Length: 213
Image 1 (tube, rainbow, N blue to C red):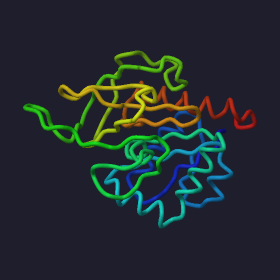
Image 2 (image 1 turned 45 degrees about the horizontal axis):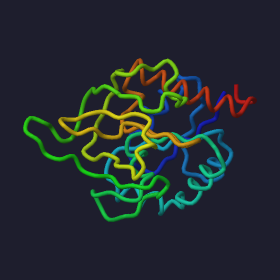
Image 3 (image 1 turned 180 degrees about the vertical axis):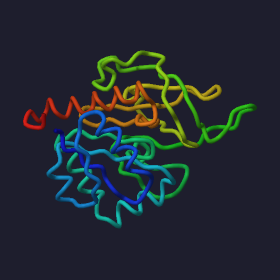
Image 4 (image 1 turned 90 degrees about the vertical axis):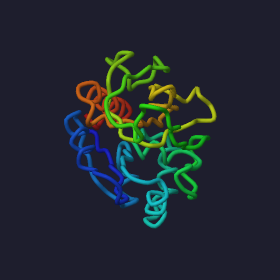
């Protein structure tokens, strides 16, 4: 089975992500050990909470450069919720620099009459990268579950694999570039579409690592 390292940096419920990955056919391992990241077939960076504490925890654990190195090596990577936001240069939520792997910033939703912040609940996806491997068996308009007050604003919109709307604002729902993929929503809470996406990620990992079947 695909050995997927679920990166532990003391932010959020890692076990729900692990349960979704296990249902998708992977062997998830919660870890903050660099050697485990290097040995894994793929990495998953989940997370809930605030941007600055998350980046401080990653730095304190010595995980920033190892994560960058593993992504640069071509290893499949999936960010979930806060794990998407940390890929960017920084966030209006705080002052810490992000991982800087995707140019752009994290911005806060504008207040609008009748629109709740945080954006919490089910929203539909508009798929903008039809050949993204995550979308096999996923349809434009499928519903997924969001919980967030901030959203990604990539410098190059072509990195968007899917968008969604909240009030009058159209925002990034998922990004994909080569082996790096991430979702603002929680796929493990977005059954059945979310489980299909996790299964697609696991299938991609297995295809790149034929011994991990």
